[in-house]
Length: 235
Picture (cartoon, rainbow, N blue to C red):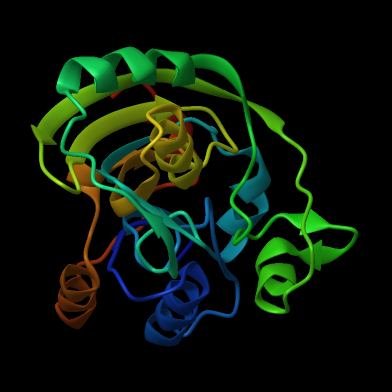
């Protein structure tokens, strides 16, 4: 049982929860994941099994997402899981204005990670510092966003924008939502996130936990071979 499980992570579970569940189902000690997803997020979470865990640090880094950005709201966590700290009607914001503002987030950009993130500062996780009320000064980091495509637009007091984003490693979609809202001067937060591609695996080829457990019961589950993340590139 060496290779990868391309898991379609459900909402409500941490990436660590998913690893623990896979470990229990397969009765394997060595299980790990690539590319942490927030508990509220869904989509591709590559799970390495047995000796394939050695390959996690070498996996392809590019990722792609479908996200929903809600304008007119700013939260502590930069998504709807946090406390609302500011709200303002966004009725007057137009799609043309949004498209124009989005251009500044494409290419190589400087991005400040969310305060509630797993990044370490002076040996401490940012989310632990934020929860304890410590003052946080996070340095901007260089990330690359290959493209942002608008999928849908729903105007209103709290207008929503559906986007498809392809990006390099270390990019926070929550930060893009936050910064877009700031650029439009109405505030913004991430309302939903689904990862469609990660580490050479695509959502179309992923398994939900129900599908995974069904395959195990029927004894037909076969992990992707250890080199499959590289063979899948460009699919």
